[in-house]
Image (cartoon, rainbow, N blue to C red; front, side, top):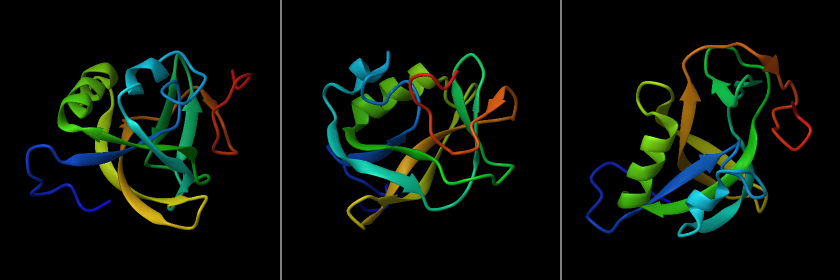
Length: 130
């Protein structure tokens, strides 16, 4: 996946999901039109917290974060922005993700603007994480 700057209409975007948008969770239905790229870990370390919902905080490096990468079109990216409350509740930024197959891809992630809640020190949100 290439950089998203200067993309043409119809372009596809990588999105890294780590919480309720993952397979098996309540918001995964929003990704029904997305293309699954792969499972992986963020290249950099962040802090993954669970409060009312999971959120990755940039300010405290604790561990790499586990998630899934999907390819989405511009319309779906806009719908995900609305779901995540970008740029007020969550803030979307591009990061590098190391996929399980060894590829490194650029993908958007939704960062939470502050820490708080239960720290998931292992960097993975799953059933029973609460």
